[in-house]
Every structure is written in C-alpha cells, then in structure tokens.
Image (cartoon, rainbow, N blue to C red; front, side):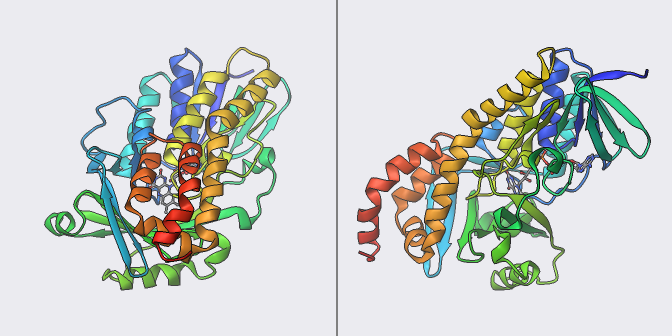
Length: 379
Ligand SMILES: Cc1cc2nc3c(=O)[nH]c(=O)nc-3n(C[C@H](O)[C@H](O)[C@H](O)COP(=O)(O)OP(=O)(O)OC[C@H]3O[C@@H](n4cnc5c(N)ncnc54)[C@H](O)[C@@H]3O)c2cc1C
C-alpha cells in the first residue's frame, strides 16, 4: 500500500491553508491538493477584517497589505454618512499574494502541496480515498476546503438551494494613487440599494479600485447588467473585466462533517450574510479542522468539529442573518437608519472589526430602533 497521509486537504485557499498549516504544525502528514497553480486569481473585494488579521502571524508581507482602512462611507439613495474609528478596522489586501503567502506558510510548516483537482472521494470508515486524474491518495481524514463552486461538499452537506446563496461580482480598476487617496482615503465606500439583499462597494486598494456588487442570487437575475450599471453610475468604464461567483449565505444550518470528512470555509457555508465577509470564517474553520483531525475516533472528531463550528461561528452567523433580514426586509426604513444614524454605523463598524458580536450589536440596536426610526422620520 502507498503512503497514507494523516490528512488530505482539498483546496489551498485560506481555509485549506489554515487547516494544513495547523495540522502540519502538530506533526501530522499533510497533503494539499489544489486544482490551480498558485499564485492564482480569486475574485474578491480584498477586505481583511481586524478579526481575520488577528488570526495571522504579523507582520504580513508588504506585497499583501495595500491600505489601512479606518472607516466607511455609506450611501442609501440621497443619504451619505461617513464614520471613522481612530484605528484600523480592516486592511485591503492583494488577494492572490495573500493566498500565496498562506500556502507558503503551510508548506513551511511541513505540509506538501500538489496541483491536482480532486474529482471524488470515498470514506471507507477506516480511510478516505481521494481521487484525482493522476491517481488515488489515501488519508485518515479529508478536509474539503474547495470553496463554494465545487461539488465535493455536496457529498457531506447535500444539495443547496440557489435561494439561499449570494452572488458577488467584482472588477479591479487601475487608477492613479493620488485620485484614490483623494476620493476615498481610508474609507470603504458602500452603496445600499444597488442589489436586493446586498450592496455595491468601491474599495480603495493601492493603485486600483475594487468595484463590486453582491446580493441574493435570486434577486440578481441579470448580475452582469446590474454590475455594468453600478460601474457606469460611479464613473467607471462599463467594459471593465468582471469576475465573480456564488457565495454561501451563512447562518443557515448545514452539515459540516460526516465520518472522516470535514468541510471548512465557503465549502462549509461560512460567510457573513450581511457583508459577504468569508476570509475570517475560512481561516477560523480551517484552523479548527486542523486542530481536530488526528488520533481521536472519526465519530468524535466529526461531532466535536460540528459543535465547535456551531458554538464559535454558527451562532453569531445566525444573528448576522437575522440582522441582514431585518435590514433588507424594509430597506427604505432600515438602511436609511444605518445611513442616517451615525451612532448605528459607528457601532456596526465595531462588528466588522470583530470587537462586537452580531448578538451584542442586535441587543444594543433593537431597543434603539424605534427612536432611530422616529429620528429618520418614519414613525
Ligand atoms: C466577488 C467576491 C468578493 C469577495 N470579497 C470578500 C472580501 O472583501 N472579504 C472577505 O473576507 N471575503 C470576501 N469574499 C468571500 C471570500 O472570497 C471567500 O469566503 C473565501 O475565499 C473562502 O475561502 P476558502 O478557502 O473557503 O475558499 P477559496 O478561497 O474559494 O479557495 C478554494 C480553493 O479550492 C480550489 N479548488 C476548487 N475545487 C477544487 C477541487 N475539486 N480540487 C482541488 N482544489 C479545488 C480552488 O482552486 C481554490 O484555490 C468575496 C467573494 C466574492 C465572490
């Protein structure tokens, strides 16, 4: 029999690299299989929240970090509000350099990586056989971290309705640095009302803007048209290259482990349903998977992983989903409140920075909503 790995990781994005690195640091034999050679392009706004940053070794290489963000400018129809914290809440990163850096960290910790697409896997109860075009690899555990688009996760989580998916599209538009600094400085530019259940964004990266839209997939029947409109309305060339894909809507209950197979990151459905933030959840779930695989019986690993995901990430994502539904249920009332009530926006920035949970934010917000609505002229 050939080599038996302790763990194979399908996908070398943030979730896969975090899982591989954590397991390799524990002395396990780890193989990462990714279908693409790195560095690879990944459609992304490139916003790395403070809570995501806090999970990484500092400093990050200079080619990864592009701009420090201290606040947000929020637009809703005729309203514009801008709030800043006196400190960094997010960094804008070069996503392909970031993923390359995380993968290198995993390799430095002892993981191996090969450019092969995982076509299928079979869990015999004792071992997992992982099939690629080149052959079959065996391991004691498999972490599926192959993102949202890939079908492998369905063998564990089952099919997912398109209704519960988000969709994000993005263009990177090169612009002179002075113009970027002058127009946005250190603020994220967020436009509500552009896509139902979501928003448009203009992020000031180093030497380019990331311009994108995201929303519920069911409410974006012509996503490219919506994206072109957003580009046009904000003075960007309509013909810009557009990339993107479906993203899961976190907060819905999903199965994330079965037998010897654990799902992490987008494959586990872990994305903030209001902001679309997924990198933090990918890093956190990947790290958890890497901590849990090993010597314990598979049934205990699967059960413990499911309950940790629920406790440490799932619960708060459910509050995020609740918040998102409230905000988008009557957008002209609630998004107006967010755009008009500077205190609400300021507190929300603390959620984005990871200093406040969605639960605490909701508990803070709900008693204040009637007053906020009154001030906004709605009650
Ligand atoms: C347009 C857009 C903008 C976004 N902006 C942000 C943002 O600003 N901030 C943020 O936090 N999140 C953002 N997200 C979400 C974020 O990109 C994801 O949540 C994050 O990439 C999830 O990481 P992951 O490791 O789970 O998956 P991915 O990063 O998707 O990595 C999956 C990896 O698996 C590989 N793979 C796929 N199938 C296979 C297979 N069968 N075999 C082997 N390898 C395979 C892929 O090549 C890829 O390298 C955005 C998403 C989109 C679409």
